[in-house]
Amino acid sequence: MKKLLLLIIAILICGYAFTETNVNDMSNDELKSLYKSVKQELINRKLWDKSTLPAGVYISGESLPEGSYECIVLYDYTGILSYKTYDDFANNKSYVSIYQLNEGDVFLLTLKGNMCWDIRKPVIVRPFVGMDW
Image (cartoon, rainbow, N blue to C red; front, side, top):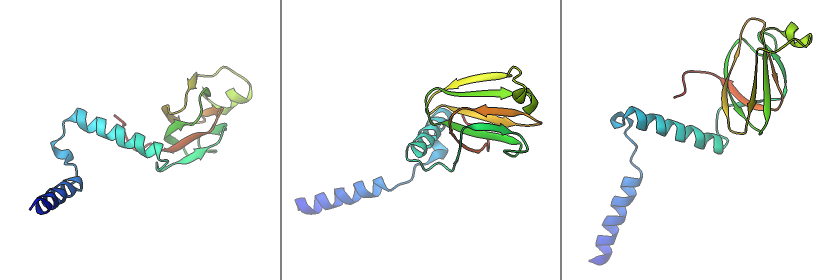
């Protein structure tokens, strides 16, 4: 009788373990938290749909198509400089903005017009598809 009871309990536990999470019943905060956790786990397992962008200078419309890209920094102390145009970069004119990022930081890279980005260390990129809460 004990074996039968243990078997029934084991079957119930296994059945519960394979049930799907019902996201419809989650609050907005719970859903955002779950999204961030899943995304971080995909990054940790290196399963994120991505490409590695080597260090270098990128010009909108030439190096990369115009648009927005979600980027993850691979190394600490990654410097990223933004210029209005490639000519500003080539003529050593002042940059529009500078960022000092660390491993795991996520940022949005937007390329438009004749914009130029100088990325000092490799980053992981993918096309930006929507707002990340």
